[in-house]
Image 1: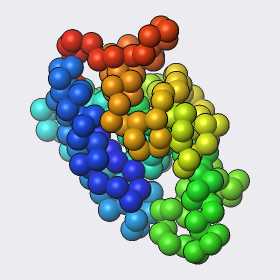
Image 2: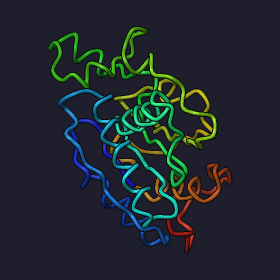
Image 3: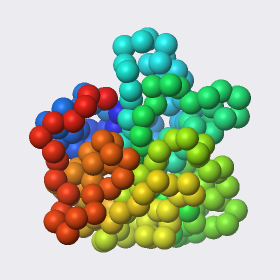
Length: 214
């Protein structure tokens, strides 16, 4: 399942989804209204969606690939399960976050200083110590999460992408959004979904010929 970020649309992830399909994965684009409500509300919706997938019995395993704020929504879904005393659905596989502001975004802070609370969700992404995102609980230890940062990201600083308990972290070429459309990023996503770690060879990661269906 691929989840977009703030001010975006699920179709932005279609090129990455196509690359993963060619590697053997069935893909689904999950969309939401990113400028309205709160990250917690979005996460609650995502948690409900995962419950329904688990109850349907149609899927053996579902991985999540989340861009930017989509990763925060995913963390909120995990927190929702913890808060309700539920274990995360058995079908939940690995999670890859691309450009997610796990410690906040300086751009979100600047925009809210200049223009006020343009959006509740944007306000929650500030990189200040008291922001919502900086007070989210760490994900459960049993959930395997890999984080990808981009070299030319002008929205989220490299240090701000790190997440307590992350299984692996890597850096790819490209900008905050543009990196989603590169073979290198797709290759790293696919490698983590298959192996639980990122590609470490000198050559850039590339999609393997086949992968186990999610």
